[in-house]
Length: 422
Figure (tube, one colour):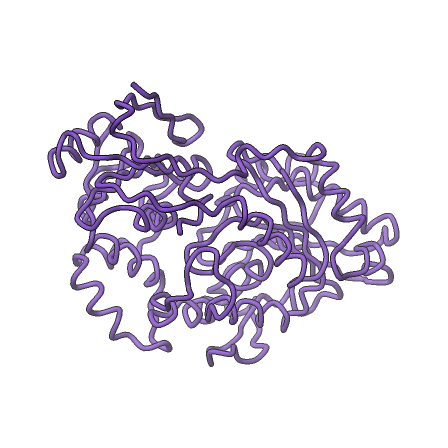
């Protein structure tokens, strides 16, 4: 008998299963990677040796206004470690600079006061200027041109009016952008909803290159990179994390080159071979990415890549914040068939909010039964969206076995966000 642990919120769920039923366990090697230094030192080393860029302190000389784009509450970016080092680098040469932290919410809800306190720490929260991006506030946005795809490129004014634009973030596989980090700080991070919708259109989401681990010829990445370049994102600091959300490597410097270096690093660690099975158990790696149903499109897409057609995907997901997207919820209430039919007839300029998430969810629903394991989310919400629900992992396994057999093979992806399934 094997004991399997799956991240769930800030804890984990445990399942005992006969070893002969386990087809495979797919995990990123980042979780066992031994870093060459402790977290703060890794970031400091990256700042001291930027890739294809001057040091940040040299870029900051003489700049009056400096804006630092930072991730919101849905991302486990270790801001408490990164930010003090950024401020130290800037203020060592420019103590009078007006520094603003711009929280990149993209299409997410605004971060709460407690979430910002948890992210920045009390000292930074009280003493630094923090602004939360709102992609629907026309007064805070400005049009700076057109995306390669033709959509309007509209971003936060603070990023345009600043003298130096910087971004912190982290790099992991991303289900349609290839990888997170780098250019994503601008699009979707601080972009208008109009711009995000143009980039997340049905045509691009369905594109064969819009998949985890792929940057080349990925139309979504192409738009994102162009947006960041047009916004003059001058310097990035991106980290790679293990399963405990600890920094194992850091990359700083040029928007594109530093990001590519980070993508190459995590890409080698995250790539795993598909092990098809009738039951696939996965998660979003626990808090903070498992706070809502919306975010779980990530782990479900990894499970989709190794679940046999007609099989069952079990998602261990706290979802204490509910569905996370009213728009996605309303889409999926109509049923997967109807969703896909309507979405694939929707042209690029008519994209609806969170259409992309409904498109991917519906695509997976049409091939697999999806069971969410949660004792923190209203099961009625899940069932209305076309999912099944269980309170425990054991209950979910019984439900799955009733569909595909009591001896069905099982593939486990403890952290579906962290892997690239080939």
